Image (tube, rainbow, N blue to C red; front, side, top):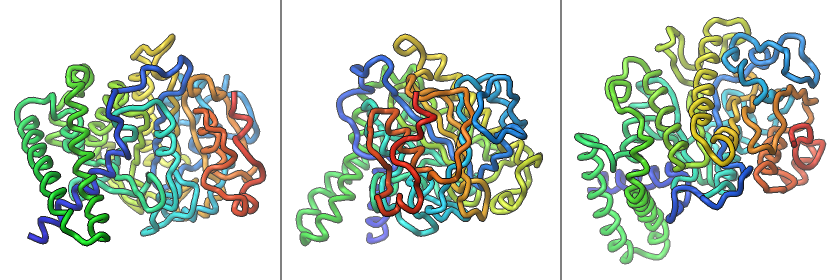
Length: 439
């Protein structure tokens, strides 16, 4: 009985956190958002580092237009989108202790590491609270080796809602599909969805009753688990309320979900569900962790036998293995852009009001001190950011400055993100956003 109780508590805590924070009860997305208002941001983090030589044309060491410049082979798929692109080199993350991974520090801009809880909200979650409201403000998905995604279908390493409040990423596409689209599914998926709904409703009811008999301290802790089940059940009810709408966007549920030959089948399936939630207006922030913010990961579906930490000890430039991985990432980025460009929104398309941020969870390489942390941005965030350019920073501004810039792009004009005056005095030479990026 104790084991079952612990299991249910873990389910509530994990699933509640995986939902991405408080759920909005009354609409799919904010219809009142003004034209030209940023509406969504996507973060894509590849583990093992992002060597700048794999994205910056050789010899380019100063600020320049990307027009007429050919991108390196690993990111060649993005060539048609250079007018929508900004490449930033020379930001640092020395204060995040990245080494194998900065974990929560990669998106938080603070010290991270194995077993270190988040010390503040990460930029992806912070943006989700500022962008137009949705049923599921923030969705996190994680791609890994198949055995890891099966054994640990949820994992929290990259995103956080606040100090000590990690957000779980989903790695089993079947579970994620059932959570979001189970109410409109048929057959076994529908039956599992309904059975789980009945269980969760009953557990919430019983948990609420029994919690009242506990001492005050235990009652508060127990209440967090009750809230977890309440959020799960609330999400199901709200999704049921827009079931006709969801039918237009549900991805095809087939063998890639049910009979994956390689882990990349599940990677592709997770991406399809993520795209569907964006197009359906269910979420405004999507965070993708390829390698799930750790040092593992596998890409056997690309013909790559090496996996995990060994990949981080290989030089990335001109390495056929890393070229394949980076090209696979870029194909996913292109798919995201094409899918969003296919949907009208306002006077343009969804992509016109979207920003995609591509980087790594540990700066430029494995075993790094974070001296250089490259980024590729795609989209102009509804005209708030300049594009079509390469920006070379001087290694004196931190990744927090980029995150401050993103906040300014959505209307939050704070001076700094997750960096107090004393810390900034050591790690940042300016206050506010990166001026070269602002339109």
